[in-house]
Length: 199
Image (tube, rainbow, N blue to C red):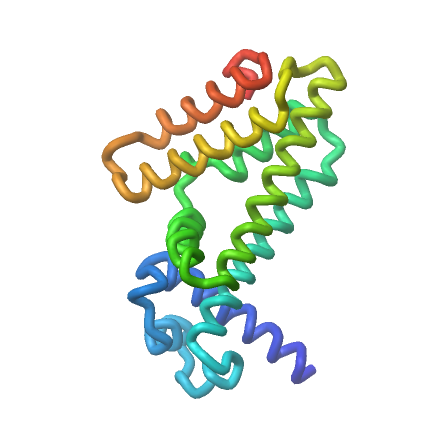
């Protein structure tokens, strides 16, 4: 029972850490900020995490695990390739207001200086890219999609999604969520030979 409570407390702390880091950024977040937001002492925080770097890395690992679990749900789905693609695009859409994108964008920047964050972010990117390519290939095989280069299409779609997310969070007035969603769906539709309104 104690270990179960400890695991629950640890999960709560990681969730809170992700929220604070998404709001303030890795570079401006202090452990005291996370402790206050979680309603605990710094001593309790350091009971669970020995250092600030360990806390940050594990918080990003926690967020990554949630995203990877969501990708796995799409991968296991029995829907058609088009249905699975719609779900994946909604999951990754920069048009959906979420603190998650702020965390990812900041983590990408930190990953240039942290091998641990680079490894975690690369694993997420690789799984997402493989899943999208598999969906496109399945759609081509089923006759739903027309795409001569699923690998290239995958890179182009995800590059646009990432780029739109950066633009929307760094320059929030430059692009509306509606316009970003339309750009993403149109680009994906063009890559697989379907009408944008199907996505």
